[in-house]
Amino acid sequence: MAREGYLVHEGEETIHSDKLKRTPLTPKEKRQNFWYYHKWHVLIGIVAAILLGFIIYDAMSKVEPDYEIGLITEYDVPDNVVQDMESKLALGAKDRNGDGKVVVQVSNYALGGDTTNAQVTAANVTRLMGDFTTYSDMLFICDSKGYAYIQKQDGWDTSNVKLPMPKVMTYDGYSFTVNLRALDKDSDKKYTQHKEYWDASKEIYENAMSAKSSTKTS
Image 1 (spheres, helix red, strand yellow):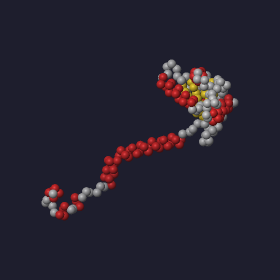
Image 2 (cartoon, helix red, strand yellow):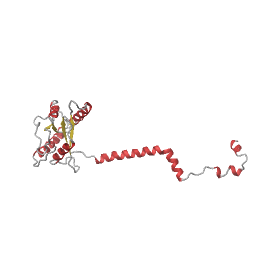
Image 3 (cartoon, rainbow, N blue to C red):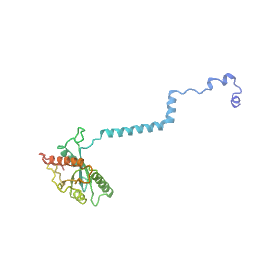
Image 4 (tube, rainbow, N blue to C red):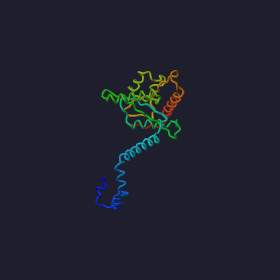
């Protein structure tokens, strides 16, 4: 009855006229309508796709080092010194993982002094002990504080400690020694694998020791 009341003065043709039907949306109006109701879904999808792309790119472009060397010091060592260590040690290194590249990665673990932020020191120590536990590093370059820290935990191979730095790795203002970690054949279930890595790490040190040229980095 309500419908007839509104159209009381209209005939049957008007009641069933196409003019009362909803006018079709134009393409522009359809796009506007879709964007109004789905814009957040689209934006979230775009952001998710970008993040996924970054994750895939990072995984595909990440280079796994053939050797990881620990640099245990009181304070942070400048990047140019760390990079020089990597390049000098890489000269006598081999492609252990078969990816076609020879990569030596030197990780600096700064133990900090009296004025160093305690949280930063704690983070570096945690990282050092984590890598020590997982046998990531076999060869360590240390200053006196770095050497003493591992010595207190009986972590060194006593036959391979306080070895001299190669002449090609001389750095103004720094006094470093080279040290190799201890391995325990009886308790280490992966001893053979770790010993092979230990030997390879010592070999790149020996190759650097026999290098002829010397370039001093400050």
